[in-house]
Length: 123
Image 1 (cartoon, rainbow, N blue to C red):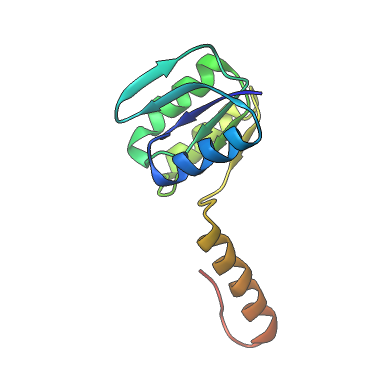
Image 2 (cartoon, helix red, strand yellow):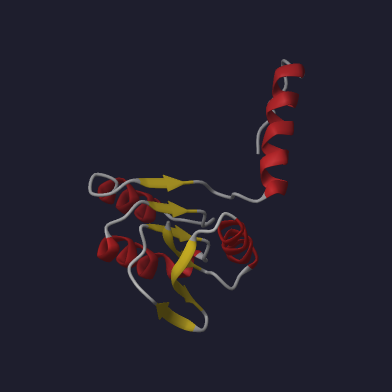
């Protein structure tokens, strides 16, 4: 699969690139602090950037019109409204954080919530 990563030079972006490379997928597009690099249009776009880059990220998603995975934290209600709007045009998967640490914390919180009845357990 040909894929693109926004925020490719960051921690999560680097992990995504490494994992996809291990699986023999081809990185064909990046956008990060060093600018844009494009070999061809991707079949999938993954956003591991900061909320300040949201407008650029969504514009690339619209341009490529491919499935869009966004792992950016700190999005605004306006950002979510745009994601909902564009999800009618191309598939969008949004999660606040894909890091292992957050996923473990979410699982622990869910377990605590089930055990500690009568307590308000949430993140």
